[in-house]
Amino acid sequence: MLSDAFGRQFTYLRLSVTDVCNFRCQYCLPDGYQCERTRNEMSLEEIGRVATAFTQLGIQKIRLTGGEPSIRRDLIEIIARLRALDGLKTIALTTNGYKLPQKVSGWVEAGLDALNVSVDSLDARLFQSLTGHNRLREVLEGIDKALSLGLKVKVNSVLLRGWNDHQLDQFLAWIKDTPISIRFIELMQTSDNLAYFKRHHVSGALVRDKLYTLGWREVARSPTSGPAVEMVHPDYAGRIGLIMPYSPDFCRRCNRLRISSEGNLHLCLFASEGHSLRHFMQNDAQLSQLKAQILALLQRKSEGHQLHQGRTGMTKQLAMIGG
Image 1 (cartoon, rainbow, N blue to C red):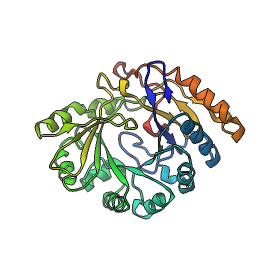
Image 2: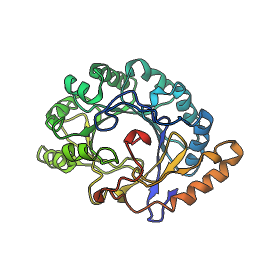
Image 3: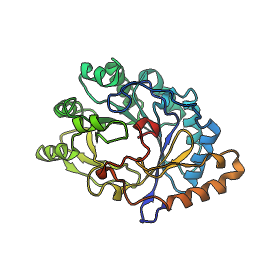
Image 4: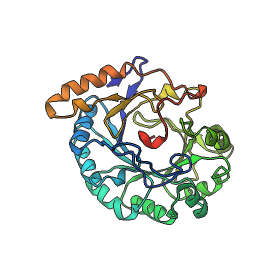
């Protein structure tokens, strides 16, 4: 199993397939995607090779991210390539839900196991203001279809003061009879959102404390779970997860690594640099070299991020390496 110098074990890989996104979320890409440089995304073959290396090293879960991964025309082929890997237990995908009702069946047929969909508000007007798209109904229809196809579904909602911090009751009403898990995510500071962060950051601890008063309780995490503190209630079909990167012990539970769409290994979302693996992905004969390089680089992973000191590393916005 992959381990770092601090004894943390890694079973979960976030694999970005593009940094392009077609939404204009206020907290990430308020001006939309800006093509500031030539795109150099990994090919299907390169994605297959790096996923093979990580799976052979003990990764059990791969999440495809972006940007918006459904922009990739070969996304179905990517999912199918991952499905063929021995030892990989879970293939997940994070999406903004664009044209989800039309696309999700193909993803399931290719081998997708789990889906995360971004829904920052259940109010159609606020949803449009936050994302730049009047597509809440379409997204919710896609979630219903995903559930009908047997997918494990989670909803990502970034907590934003003045936008959705008053909507907890609406989300709770939704999961009363709907078996989804809602992930409330604290807004994180990046290098280009400091003013927005200061205006709109909400501590996840406030939501957690309110949930405690309503009878919600924490449950144990599985080895491949993400960093969320997950909570359940006997009267609800759904669950609540809280992702609180500013909590004191957040990095102690880290079990994930990240590959950018250009083939760089990011040891932390807020690391000061990425490490290129691209030159080890050019043919199958390089697999042993690729695995050795991953193992060597992992020992350079730091004990924790430095967000509390306002140090956001190279992350300009979260679409760069998939959040």
